[in-house]
Structure formats: C-alpha cells, structure tokens
Image (cartoon, rainbow, N blue to C red; front, side, top):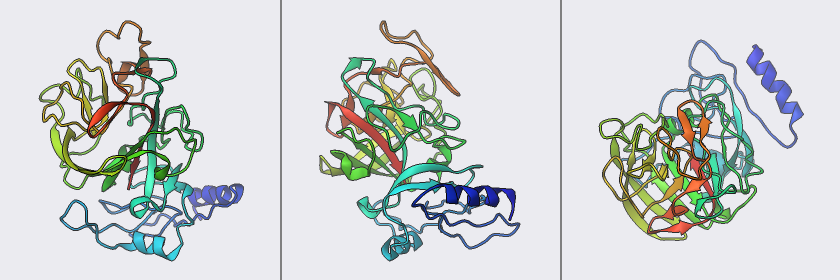
Length: 323
C-alpha cells in the first residue's frame, strides 16, 4: 500500500461505526468505487480516494436519470445519513462532513452553515464564511447550532461545488446536527446550466460584483419545504451569490435581479462575511479578515436576516449542501 492508503487504513480503525472503502491511486484509470459517501462527478476522477461513478443526467433541470449512486442508496450500502469522509476530484486530502442520504434523493453533502440571531449587527450573528477559504473555517458539522463553518477541504468548498450538479439551501430552526429535513425551509437549485467555473472569490459590490467582473446567469430554483413553486432566479455564476448595491448585504444564493449588484427582497439568500469588504465598514461592524480574499469582512452583519424565495426577515440557521 502507498502512504496515503496506509494513513487512511489507520484512520479507519480509530473511528467507530464508520465503514470506509478506499482504492489505491494508480497510473491508469480504475472503475470508480464508493468511499462511504458519494459525489456526482462532472469530470473523470483522478484522486487518491475515488468517491463515486459519474452521474448521468437528462437535459431537463429536474430529471436526473437513475445512476450508480442511486443504486448504492437503494441497496443500503450508504450506511444511512451521518458523518462520512469525502474527497472530491481535484482535492489533495479528504474531509469529514454530514451527508444526508435520504432527503430529495439523498447524496447531499453539507458544505457550509451560518446563523442569523437577529437583524442588523449583533455579536450572535454568524454569517456563512467565504467558501473559498483554504482548509475551511471553524468546521464542526455535528455542533453547528448558533455558529458558522466551512468544510475543511484544502480548497474549501470550491472543488466540491464544481463537481456538483445540484445545490440545496436549507434554513430555519437551529439544529446541532442532522439532515436537511431539520430545517423549516428548503430550496433545491440546479447547477446544470451554469456555464461558469465556480471560484467563490469575493463577489461583493467592490469586487466580483462590479459590472464586467463576474457574470450574472439564471438558475432554476425549486422550493421543497416552507414554500412551494419553481422560480427563475439570478446569481453571479462564479460565486453562486449576490450582492447589494453598497455590498450590505452580500451572501450566497439568488435574487430576482438580472444585474451584478442591486437592492433586492427575494431569495433564497443567506448572508455571508463579504459585506463591506474593500470599503469602510459599517459604523458598528468589526472588520475581520477571511483568507484568502475578504479583508474587512462583516461576520456579524445582516440586513433583513436570510431571505426566502418570496420574502425576508428570516432568522435561524442557514446551510448549503451539494451533490
């Protein structure tokens, strides 16, 4: 065995109740296998840990064809929802996250979370960290109540998102752990028609949200819980986020404005730490640096809480999942 496999083999025996399947890195492509979680791959997997066979999708936004990952779920080999080790293609090391193996087809991997305590600036507000933060931020997927965190993969959530076909935004309530159904509002977003490579670079009004920097594109959003209906919404394709005309607020999610920055009142939208970065902070904000590209961020700020598809002023935990 090579050193990576040996390290993982030792790790397996140090963790209770986990079944980890692994394969050795070879000079030729191997048939993909499951390693206690699964990822639908857009590109061929070239990593030490191969997670799952590529998914095959139809041309429609909401009709993925039956694939091997569904067969794994149906056979019961997924071990159910819980903590899993994942390593998306292109990553150099694995990370642990909570995987929901049952909601909306299963295979959802938690990427980040935040918390809205009250509107405005409050020390108990915990905006979602920038999702390109190297090796994550404050990552405790089984202790996420009233907190914020980002998966501790080497590239944050960048490789995970680029390998994904779908995104879920789930919010409301304040669960410490558990799956998507713990939340009171759930939205599923198709990433199939996003033509841009996701970088999660700073996308606020003074950075990627300037005209001519990142690109506005449309997304199909489906409300699964808390609201109903399907919506066409817009976001900066490289960031999966939007920003106000003065950057307060900036965050991840979508709005109904087909412009790089604007006032808005419809989402789904979750505040992130990007508000105010690159300009003078708000009067009562504590500017905070977030690596690699968010100087002077505002982790305790939100404008009107998190936004539902048809309204704002929402409080509670926010979370972002991919598959």
